[in-house]
Length: 221
Image (cartoon, rainbow, N blue to C red; front, side):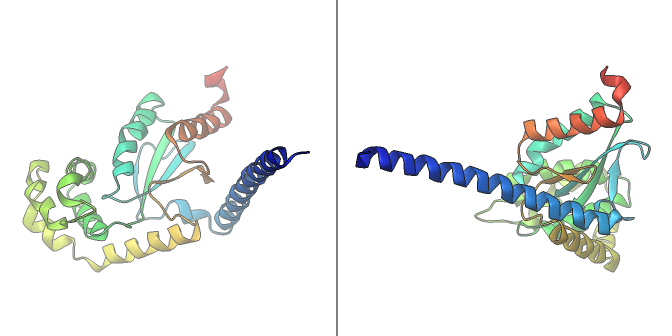
């Protein structure tokens, strides 16, 4: 066999090993996460966790999000569409992984807005105005205040409530949960405790549909 063929064959073998190793690694990581979940069943939804959807829903999407994450913002319409398409069957659970500069500040505002019943409106404003306050080259979290009045929030009360020590406690709990589940990027998705190992909208759709079919078989006959 000439040198050229040997070289090509070695490249092919390396690629095969890389793919096999990657799949094995992902499988091992998924196994670790499932093991962690079985030991701590409430890790995907805490008492403080914000939710959207009925408690009776059999398919639970847990999302670790960061208000400053562009991908979180991009996935928000997808998640809303899933809940709208399968009403009563899917519930969203929000947990925090504030990785961007100023994200923990935004989470405190979010949780304070929640006390006024304006959680989702506030999160949407944060997403919409990311280019203003969450620029990676020059983040300016304080810039969000100019947009918050459009939600109808009582700003004075908001500024007071966001300093509640309980909010810091829940942030730290979510961060600890994210570390346990090896969430290092946002958004981090789990469906009924199963991790989205290969990230992407199509992969998330397939995982959601798989759980829907398992839990609501009569709807897919």
